[in-house]
Image 1 (spheres, rainbow, N blue to C red):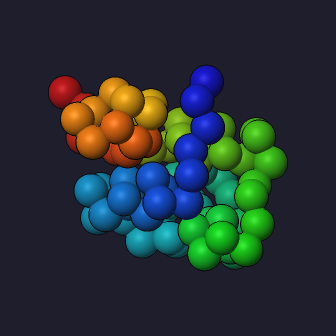
Image 2: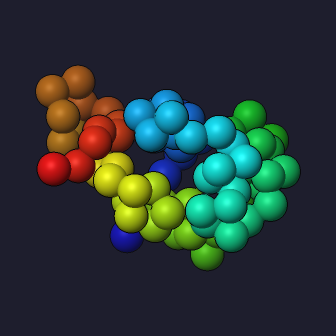
Length: 80
């Protein structure tokens, strides 16, 4: 499973129109975990990153690996 970075988390929340609170609820994590991750204060554990990713994927987000899009970097988009 590919990991996600803070920019992908913020971008995915934007596509979903989710607040940090909504993401925290959907991933069963604390709001401070989401806030600190997205501000670059700390990297959550592998399990917490997986929970964030899973919540967003279940809501329709597709995570893009390096080079998977035309711009060449990791990203997010709405799934089909």
